[in-house]
Amino acid sequence: MYELIPVSDRSYYIQSPAKMGLVRLNATEVCLIDSGNDKDAGRRVRKLLDANSWKLTAIYNTHSHADHIGGNRYLQEQTGCKIYAPGSECAFTRHPILEPSLLYGGYPCQELRHKFLLAQESRAEYLTEEVLPDGFEMIRLPGHFFDMVGFRTPDNILYLADCLSSRETLDKYRISFIYDVGAYIQTLEKVKALTARLFVPAHAAATEDIATLAQDNLDNVWEIADKIVEFCTEPLSFELLLQKLFAAYELTMNFEQYALVGSTVRSYLSWLKDSGKIKAEFDRHLLLWERV
Image (cartoon, rainbow, N blue to C red; front, side, top):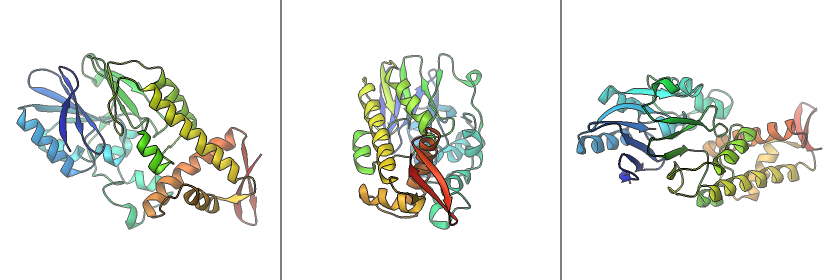
């Protein structure tokens, strides 16, 4: 774990729970794509930097989930590097309490205020094309979260962040976190058509062929959507629908999964309602969802 894997003359990824990218900008300076999930991840990155006599100039965050920004603060304090995050992700990076608050729909209880959902604050600036290193391309990949992006390096390595999960992850967890289902589907269709020397997803193996895995993720989205519509043959409250989904996919209910899966199911409900596949009605002070 935290092994530095070269994928070209100047591009690498750091094998970790959420892969980080590392790109050499010149003989002595490097930048990171994401920073891992906590201070310990930052320490491990610092050891890699020191071992290679590299100076970290910047961290380019793909999005603001805690497992991608958790090392920001430590590395910024240790190296003085700049940190950049795209769009509204910048606000979440500056104020990480927003992530568990969004997931829970209110102030998060103690069980949701831990490093996997709540990173330390860091001094992030807005990511724009102008602050990217020469030859870098920012690719917008919304859906998993608000303004997530990926990066193409000058040597055509494409870091894809969290826009898709491995086949193993899909089979194990089934309902992967999605903020905007419609945007996510469009992103996956976009990814299917991309070309690169190598694709590096954060939660799947690096590969030269991303289209098959993108289609697997698309198929999973449609399966979950169909299952929700199927359960809504009769009017259901959100809590009963969530219970049925957890039982159907044999998921374990705890505060973290309630927040992550629950937030995702609400996003599916919004998308299905706006698509005209289900309807919502209030009955005896309950919000009920039913197939059209």
